[in-house]
Amino acid sequence: MEFRRFNLNHTETPMTKTNMDLSELMAKHDQGDLLRSIAEAVLQLIMEADVDGLVGAGRHECSGERTTWRNGYRDRSLDTRLGTLNLRVPKLRQGSYFPGFLEARKTSEQALVAVIQEAWIGGVSTRRVDELVQAMGLSGISKSTVSKLCKDIDERVGEFLNRPLTGEWPYVWLDATYLKVRQGGRIVSVAAIIAVAANTEGRREIVGLGIGPSEAETFWTEFLRSLEARGLSGVRLVISDAHTGLRAAISWVFEATWQRCRVHWMRNALAHVSRGQHTVVAAAIRQAFDQPDRTHAGEIWHKVAEQLRPRWPKLADLMDASEHDVLAYMSFPRQHRTKLHSTNPIERLNKEVKHRADVVGIFPNEASITRLIGAVLFEQNDEWQTASRYMMVEAFAQIDKEEIDPILSITTKAASSCPQAIREITPH
Image 1 (cartoon, rainbow, N blue to C red):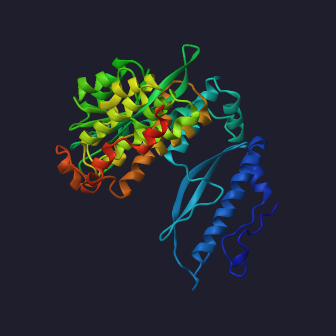
Image 2 (image 1 turned 60 degrees about the vertical axis):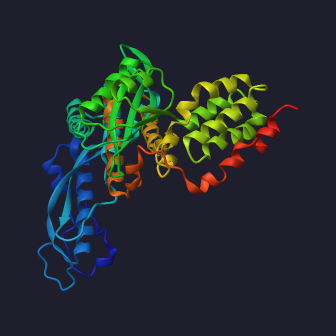
Image 3 (image 1 turned 180 degrees about the vertical axis):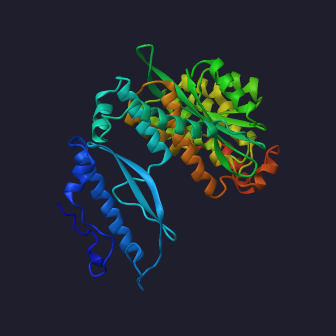
């Protein structure tokens, strides 16, 4: 049996030997391991031929076309239907080489594999997970292999989620993603609470992850206290959806202002209005958001509520009850307001979390949720650290001073009069 050279661009230069006698493999391995050994040999020959082409010379060969030198190997395993292949990926002194048939797995991808493996071994996988396991060639994976992989990921994720937090963090965003997990033989829904914070250097970081019942005040309090214990201080504004128990937890732990997510609030408000009137009513309410400061925003808010009350009393009552929560961000620096009025700044992060979680479907336990979601957050946080500043640093000095935009203030008096959008929906 002979394996021909795979790099056709260098057939004239004598490179590394690419011939292998089948009898050698049969002599070294049992018949049951023969196919796996052949597969390892083929892939190893492919890598050697590729590296010969990159180097410009074969092993121990003198050549004027040489561009770099080999620099040993790094071990890499590949799970296939034939079993686990143990490969040696060549290293270069200058530049890098990684074969196309091996995927450079990120931490989140390794975590996903670990969760699927754990579900498979535990016998709790859904049909979708079963299909993924078969496609990935993991049916023969051992418990010891899963345990080793999980331990490595858990250590890195644990260090990230429990790292000390230094400095002041004026703004904190909290959002919950609901996931299904097996508990005591039942499938229950739990909330994965993600905390993102911005410090006075204008940088945002993922500062925490908690798993538990989202409506329980005790859970929120314990989660926020764990952030405080790690060094999260100087919190002035917390932005989130209206979770039961959260407001009380914020006042107990941080004594900070709460900003109710404006996007989620608007959806709740428009539920009191017929679909045909959504556009007009939303435009009327948004006039309050266009004001230069909190005082003028409150004036417009009251005017709109009174105009809407005869036709939609429940909507007007909602506006009365939630004014301070929805307009809280207006008391903070105007340069920061576009990122303070809702949880939208972390929507992309939430989508990535949901995308990864949907692959698993039902998690075997809460530890597997922390492993997978924590790995996703770990990678995203690294990307944020290499990006530009998220917020204007100079504006933090104005955090205790309500600033009025001079351009917006010009139109304040005009906006205070009965707006056109309100007149269109007022019954005659």
